Amino acid sequence: MKAQTRVVVIGGGIAGCSALYHLTQEGWRDVVLVERDELTSGTTWHSAAQVTNFGTTQTMVGLKSHSIRLYQALAADPDYPVTYHHSDDGIRLANTPAQMDGYRHFASMARDMGVAFEVIDAQECARRHPLISTDNLLGGLWDPSDGDIDPAQLCQTLARRARLAGAEVYRHTPVTGLTQHKDDNWTVHTTKGDIACEIAVNAGGYRVNEVGAMMWAEHPADSIEHQYFLTEDIPAIAEAAHRMPLLRWAISDYYCRQAKNGLLVEFYEQAYKTWGDGWDRPEIRERAVPR
Image (cartoon, rainbow, N blue to C red; front, top):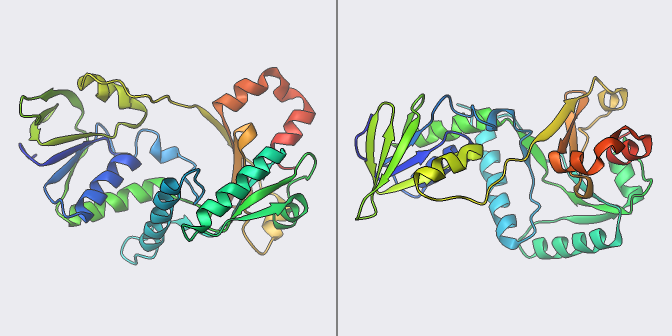
């Protein structure tokens, strides 16, 4: 293991692997990543791994467009292809006029970035995704580049490409402490020895504040618990000649996508808290999930 390098990235999930890869793309070769266990072993490996162009600012749209282009290139790599369901299409549903107005604003903003969203009415939503009901639905925002990617494969291929560019990755190397020196350089203490560096990158994921505490810093980050389930095969999906679009309903913190011939349905923790015991009520359940 190196005793000195330019940058140490702490954390081997999607954030850490992406940071390492992009540093090498900027010409930084003397960089390393340290991971306490295996790559992706935190939350990344079981992420639903949605990939969308949607963003509330032009900066976010630009970043997401960059990711889509990168993932397309990675999926097309014959030496190490990544499973990427691109152009599944997706619909962000709306049941209030304010949401529809917001979607029109986002579509206009994205158009200036070269991203073509489409605002559609409830009937068109149902035509494009025959499993949903139009009850209490006004319309939605259509994203033609929506999709999902295998998160473990993605991390592995980013790490692989970073290694080929000169970076090093140390697995099973927990960080035990960080020391900042008067010249603003750092020493990263690990169970396998110390690494001196100019820059230490905190990519700890849900453990970000454990690493932050070693830097005397507290980050405004909260872990959000997601609940999801996989359905059995659904005949309408199995018989369809195309993959079903992804669905998101922001007001209910809910989304679903096709998984084989069924659905992956996921709920954010806040949605569960909001519904509370009402989740057992059919009228709430029917508003939240496909028929």
